[in-house]
Length: 274
Image (cartoon, rainbow, N blue to C red; front, side, top):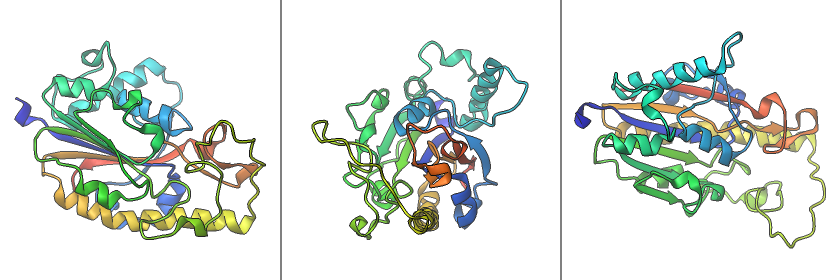
């Protein structure tokens, strides 16, 4: 029965805003389907990936719907994604952890992550047969070279960092761009003094947004390579863990921010395009 199941590939473009995708208008990703505007359950990488791996992908925010009904409908979509009619909300209980559940169904579970906050020591790695943090945070192409997807069925998650601050492509020198203190703008030594407030000009904010758009254009060709490498019997989901702020209402980045643009994400899914 395991051989009849679809492979599942979930690619998370870290920090990617919905409007950045729209402005980039990626051709290869467009072959997967029409991009949807959806909403993340969280504004930061770690909690968002926890939610994604519980099986709940970015939501549509429908009005007049009970949360429990929406969750059941969302879980029911896995029957189509995996080609397994018996998969439903109840079959994922009590763990509600997609990698563990799929592994119990005969899947090989693989993940490659770009952000250090998702490293192998975190609980996010639970349930994966093969889980690794990449040496560089912005190299999806190298990520594909290290991911062995020969054994089927497989579930693979990729956390891609080119769209994360500083929005640098693999061959770029990120030191050329405005720098936020800490590792990728997140981790600092706890004994360091508090950083001063970050101030960017409108021109710098616009440039950073353009860099994220350019990152999508670059990644579109990497997706072409990925699609060519995936077996025909693969369902692909591409989305983001959260959005990003580029100066709107005085905000930059993501994390401890409550703003629509930090929750607004792109979403597209479908069978691997041929």
